[in-house]
Length: 161
Image (tube, rainbow, N blue to C red; front, top):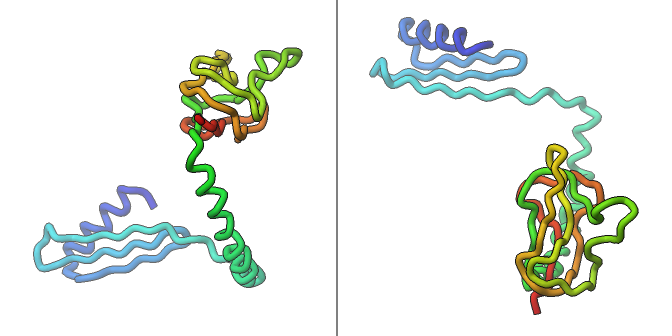
């Protein structure tokens, strides 16, 4: 159903004097409510989720148990709060080396200074050196080599002390 059909439906409902019309089709559900004022028409539009087969209905019960286990890693998250997170300034491909035959820019445990090159992010055939804005020690590298990264995605954890 396209926007023209929806607009025609609204006009039809407004002229008919009906106070509420609900329309459910294969992939959408539309509710049109009109009040006494012709300009006070409320519309709800919601895509309808496809029906799940009955065999998959038992799957949410199996997923309920891992949720309880997922709440326990809250302690490591509190530990990471003392570290500085270096994030990707651009979208691209993350590389830990300047070229395949060269050594890595940084390793876990290595001390870095402000301005040191940490990695390269390739974006549209341009290789951008990502420099450190802080001094400290690399605690963790959060991205695998040659992996795609998003803008503002965490790349490194640095202990500034």
